[in-house]
Image 1 (cartoon, rainbow, N blue to C red):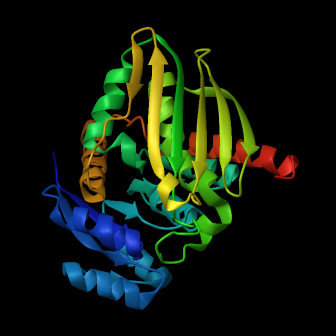
Image 2 (cartoon, helix red, strand yellow):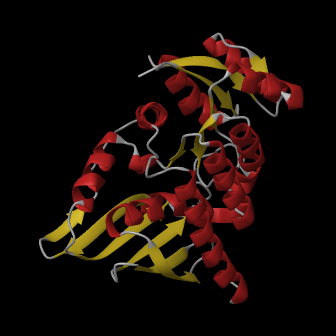
Image 3 (cartoon, helix red, strand yellow):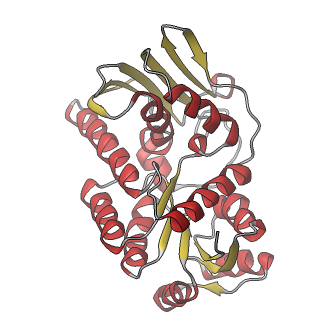
Length: 301
């Protein structure tokens, strides 16, 4: 598998904790630099890993020129136009979720990547964390499921949450858009695509989804970023003829999970075989989440 030159687009806390360490340590990657909207943050993160720092339009162009692929750690609606530009320049894409919060924008990004023939991977943690990825792959090989349920109760904005850096897009879009991609990604992995979705809002920022899959199976999800600390946590269960399968407890770090996503991108580049979690998958997640959001808005929720 050939070495790929990969640049990092984003210089926030997620990029600092996860993306940059994984890129710097990966034996199949030449880490080409960091681009950030805040020059001082990009400079600090780049200096920590001994790579060039970039900002502004000229800086983005320079990182593109130096790279075969770009990894993104940006808010979705900042990520999408830059990723589209990268795809049009023939660069492979390692994207954060959601790829965009607007359906037309997500589809345009997917079309740009497809037309350019570039490889792409969308990083939804549990599709790449070794323990959960192995579990999901095993379950996907069975066809006896009758239902599934995914609960993502994040405590980022709970009343007793620990202080955390402000993330305007997460505060605006809530759990539906931040943890919704995770929930949908695991349900889709086992039960297949979705042809009907119903959304209901509960407590502030608690969204319930009822889903019908093209197989005829149904599933559900509960999503929030505002759970009290004592109520926070993630559970995933599937029920079928052989009983109940529950998400195993795992302690994979975000760096380990992102390293697996890098591996997946490198394999897609080498084999020219699209990954199941490519940008078209990312656009599908945006379509589903946008439909749920539209239902909530129509109901005044």
